[in-house]
Length: 140
Image 1 (cartoon, rainbow, N blue to C red):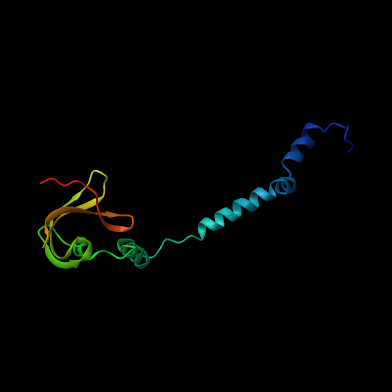
Image 2: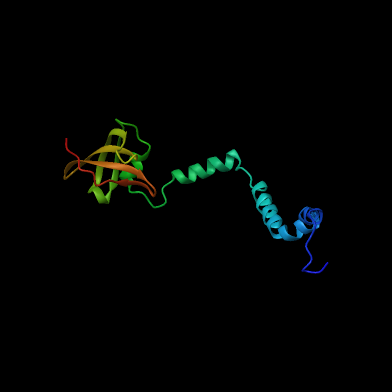
């Protein structure tokens, strides 16, 4: 058929519905859709054991923890421990006063520290890198 000849309505409808023409025009789209679907189908949900291992790894601090913080991490309010922590003046006794959720949403513990040089109260909080001493201002 020459270019200047008009298609009849029946020929135009047949050309639009021709499966080979449709596949040829949409081949790249179909190929992309198939690749995406096959990629989604092959994703697997982690096993319960893998999930618990990931949670345990996330719960462990990434950096070494100061001795007083290490004693504070799993201690309940009222718990007392004696540790040697050079950052706090050497031989100190720590007491977890309270365990609470701060305004920031982080888990924090108020800790009383008794050292030879005197006593103080500090706040330890759980952050992205583990437990750390907060700069919170403590008033008794």
